[in-house]
Image (cartoon, rainbow, N blue to C red; front, side, top):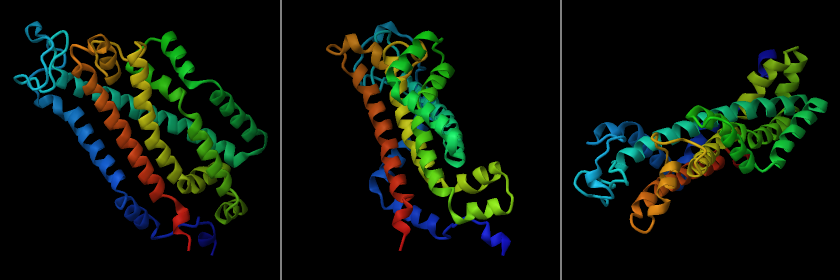
Length: 292
């Protein structure tokens, strides 16, 4: 009786119905496929290209796409754009995934504590979140990027620091709705610690919104990394990223437009794909559709 009473309300068929709804979301499946292809190409593709991303051949400067074995052409230094694009993709995706993990962990901890404890603790935490949200994140991002050494790790931390607040608000709202449920009340009656209830009972039941937020946070991180690298405050050459490739192509838009079009398309495809997957997960994990 006791073991049954302390268990949260979990539907045995919830996962299968969520998978079915996601599988019926065509744009989400398209996005998932594009993410898989893009990730595989960025991390494995460079090993199959004839030229490395730092190989310089001034004799083939500004070669257009599909010239000899330069599939995407070459840049002003004669470097293979395809090799640089894939290496830049591995850098940008790594930064985005790492920033997402940091943002989700920090935002989840703050939202979980604020939503469960409530009272003055919740008020202080959420007013802190509101204070960060009131300050334009772009200005905060640029200020931190300009003040700190722009290494990939530092760029990751900067993006995470400016992106955890939305996650905290989402988690706090979800936890507030769960803390009065029967399984939480039963846990309190049994004398379970607050940490046990938060991390073992409430958090697993709040994972749906967190997963959706994580997917959308990756798309946001890709855009932010491209933004600050485009302005020269992010990933620094010769290490390529999609953002600094765009920044270096500005002065060649008329004479060599492929220098900007190709990394721009890569950013568009990546961000759109993650947004498609996020939309699909949001629809699939919406428990309101499971109510009879």
